[in-house]
Length: 316
Image (tube, rainbow, N blue to C red; front, side):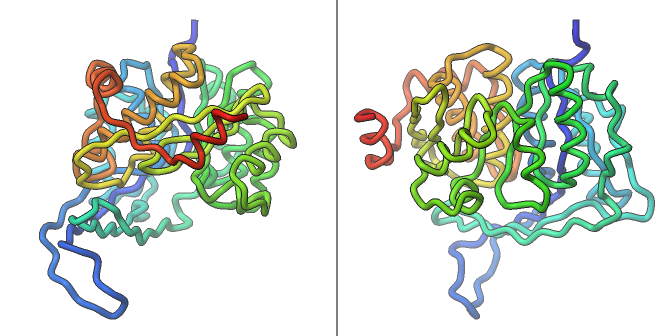
């Protein structure tokens, strides 16, 4: 039996959240209403979501030795995640971001920085770090390192999920090792140079052979392709305070769904619900819900659909 249900290799970050009444026009000026540190990061937040859902969870990454790194470590320890292979880099600041939250909409604008001293090299990823788990979750940063992790997983029959939002050099070597691609809404079009999202997902899946090729659609849910069919799950209507981290939490919920062997349509809906609930708090891990709260929203929540997507799926 595997020691862990899921292991994640990838980013963490400590954000400075600035809430403003509305985002100013270019060159404008507005007062901010509040300021706070908030731990986040793509894979780290996904692993916190997995732990909240009861999975035995391990995180592999690098953390700086500054105040932001301390805040991140405290958050991860408090989530009950195994941190045996987290490296704290000396004289290195943690990845950080300044996130401007528009109070009128909950939407955010991000300015981020990750120093080179946090980079993970492939030789720092060992088979034992990966084969101890039932599933591997990665992002696109430190591409050679995540490629090695995904290759180890593939060689040992461990499914791989990936969160990717932009094009990274060499990422084409990672995609053939992925079982579940859950990309941002922009990535499939940028990667394939195909504007139509349906055709872009089909092109990626046909070329690289992953089981599921999917994209998140923000407040409007998620679209996926599997076994030659398309699946669409609308988003949920909530009182949104901040969209930061919604995609990361979606990925954590999707990892859980894979391990629970949920049908794809159910997995997308479950992941949408957990992502939506996170938007009801401020910060990347503003409100990471448990399974009971997620299922309550699924049972009673109002959906927000993109008709042009839903109609095409139904008519396909």
